[in-house]
Amino acid sequence: MEFIYQPYIDPEFESLIERIYPPRVCIDNDACEDCTLVKVDSANKHGILLEMVQVLTDLDLVISKSYISSDGGWFMDVFHVTDQLGNKLTDESLLLYIQQALCPSRREKISREIQTHVGREVIPRDVSTEHTALEMAGIDRPGLMSEMSAVLLELGCNVTSAVAWTHNTRAACIIYVEDGFKGGPITDPIRLAHVEDLLENVVEAHDGKRERRSVRLTGPTPSQTHTERRLHQLMHADGDYERCCGCDGVGGEHKMGCDGTHVTVESCKEKGYSVVYVRSRDRPKLLFDTVCALTDLQYVVFHAVVASKGSMADQEYFIRQKDGCTLDTESERHRLTQCLIAAIERRVSHGMRLEICTQNRMGLLSDITRILRENGLSISRVELETRGDTAVGSFYVKDVSGHDVNPNIVEAVKREIGGSVLAVRKSPKWAPQASSSRTSQNTKGGIEDRPKFSLGSLLWSQLERLSGNFGHII
Image 1 (tube, rainbow, N blue to C red):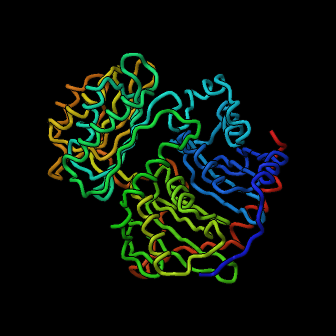
Image 2: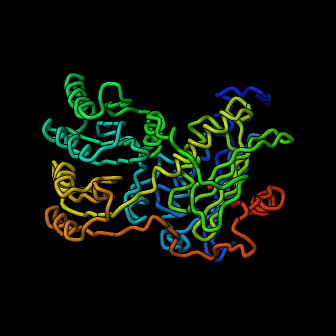
């Protein structure tokens, strides 16, 4: 293993630098015709890239390109962003919110008025400070969510929001609950232990005592973790990455038409980096999922280029481990490859998407999941939240036998759930609704060459050109 020695920086000094040189954020709508440029210039620290990407993805913005550089203790990033329809960002309240949210020292001072003008109250997907969090990871099986939500209802726990993923026969969920009788978080340790024990019994009933699983109830804590980042951590700890493998591309090449996830890890000895190249189908929040995995695996991104082309996305990262080491053994490279593939594939949903908007009530999640189970549908992904008296969310479902969902069953489910239910036969191939790029074609053979990014010709030229255009500190 090759070591790269770096000077020790006292944490207090690091925070002092951040206070003296707060992040500069510039939003440019003139440089590009088809997107808005968000430029960030800041003192560097571990995890800052994830923080920036997290702010943009929480606003449901699409990041089509990004240029990243953080050598020398300074962080510079340029994001090419649009809304979900492929339009530039023109709402002044939204632009002001982004400018303030990208500055950690000002993030907590964002007024409710600004959030309201954005069109909705923007709440980062963090562990709630007002509700109790239930975390579960274990073997995926039909009816698991239904059984868990039924236990919560029976014990007087009201579900305020829920997120669940499934991947490689494993499942993980985070459910936020409050006291169904008094409201507010459940803080009684005896009651928390009782709820946790009963939920543990539900999970253990089918998994068996030797199977890996975890069930945990926690009250509100000052230290918050982004919900989707926490889901990644739960599934990683549960070992869902162990069975991951990429496509059959060799040496960074793809067979023509291949849209599988491909990861390679190479060495750049002359610069002291390990180079990670990722090619996959493009989709929302792809950059967040990749950077989240690298950050939680304790890797530092020094340079990166990210770009989408047609329906595919290419990402290239120049990294070292947090202790300054590069990845020199095959086992290290193989594990990183598996973890990145898992992080990318967890959010990929299969089956039909049911968009639900109905009146919020205690036991709603239990009712919906029971109806789906009784109609022979298995849940692959859940996103549910409450907004006042209304509950909105998405349930990705498939037939337990693996066949397409019967339209008659869908109609029966819609009638039983009530409210507004929209069934979307979601294609697994996502592409942005507006894109100026075209899918590359290779007419000379059956192999599509991996595009080679050049930091000298691409990253540095972009950063040097854009760094001179930063506005005043806001």
